[in-house]
Length: 80
Image (cartoon, rainbow, N blue to C red):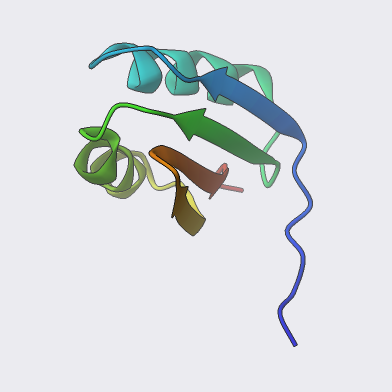
């Protein structure tokens, strides 16, 4: 049985091109509390590399990533 991820903030970054989705994500991560989860939806294919790399660099946890009809969705937990 798949578990459901509780999302605290949702970001619609569809249509934004590199590096804007990462800049938007970083800004929102500063606004939320430790352990909270952000879901970001993007259409820029570069996010497939950029967002996991950003998570690794910042210590955030990439909980999930999906792709459907050209839209990528990432669920990311802010470090405790």
